[in-house]
Length: 72
Image (cartoon, rainbow, N blue to C red; front, top):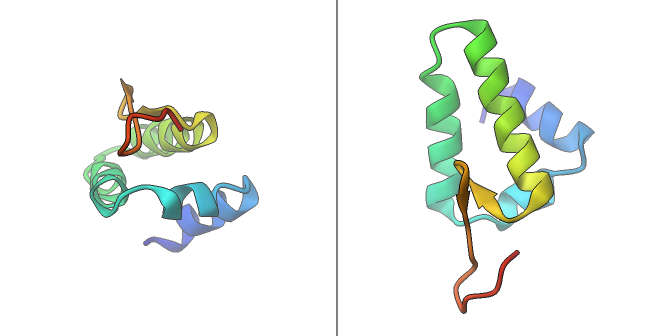
């Protein structure tokens, strides 16, 4: 994980929320952010990830439910 993303997760108190997500989601977020060509796009994607982790119910703008059907 890039240091700046790890720092942002810690600063916003979301490192545990990030680690609680399934590995495929963590990998998808990091890959999606890394594929941004412009700094503005990268920042927008980081912000979306942080907002979704804070809200707990979204993943890539889709409703996400933990196994067992419970919303996070």
